Length: 463
Image (tube, rainbow, N blue to C red; front, top):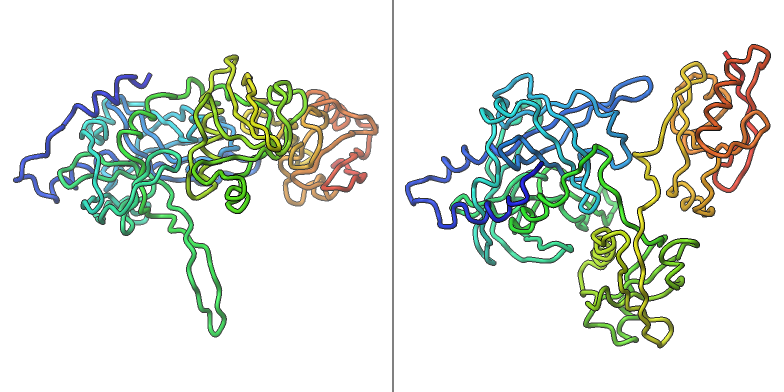
């Protein structure tokens, strides 16, 4: 397990600046040892899709962490294959093998562990061993960029000045320009760890193509100008290392969507000095419904603390979701709610969230060329269906030029009946389809499918 004492140890190390004779070039070369490049394959039904991303080395036992976008959130962990880790400058041409540990349910970060700790020690140093520090506005910071495989993961130097700090909702520093590869480290001038570069916020840009003018929203996927504060990062990194690849249990209270209170309404209601979140929908038979919450309630506070005023406004939604995810299941959470003109208090007790996409069972029928997946709450909410209806199955994959493709089945179809009989869930659907596929007296399999707002009958001719 990742040592719980890491943040305190890291903050104690290198509390004073390094000697003046240590050059930036020396620091840069040494600090590249905390950075890694990850390659893997996603095993699909008929092929393998390559994936890649940047990872940061956290401790001496070979624990690494990546940003949430490196591995898709929906991806079942058992489909991650041939995970290899490459040091910056690629001194290990074949890479080092690693094991996927899972995803932090609160921050979305992914954890890996190198399989050979001794080999890892030859190629990597943990970022926690460099000490940490807090920059001030105007301070110079520097970071490490990293090329891809075509240039053997070549590290390169970046620097900028600190321009601002903003909670997003965790304390995040902004630099005057891109300062590190996304997922890479940022350092103070003396080499202490200053923060972890995240994905930059989209920025609006004016574009002219010929005589045409466009307002475009753009983001540099390879480098970032913002970084999570080191102290916050180190404290968060050691809190929730997943015990299984599927991650930990997720608290929920049963809300379908929230949105920040718009600025004009907030001014009218005198709520300009704090944040407020509007509940879009309260799902029936959930902790929120049992507590008495209703659609369009405005949440003003949690456990006696007013909602903070955060910008951009989408950050406030993330703050609210984060507070729910950090709440112990079975322990009441107090919400201060504005309903009409009346402030009210509600006690909501989070329970375990329903099964998510990556946990949903899958079954591939090779002869038919289709994969079925269990129905999850996300499917039902997208279709504006009752979240408690877990009947039927979802078409997860259709192989091109297969009998399923010939039947015009499509990924995302919600199959309600197979062979003229309703199916109550994944187990019954897969058993029913298996029986019909094996029955020599059945020439075609009939599906009742709901696609969008339409329900149709599709016929699959068996090979």
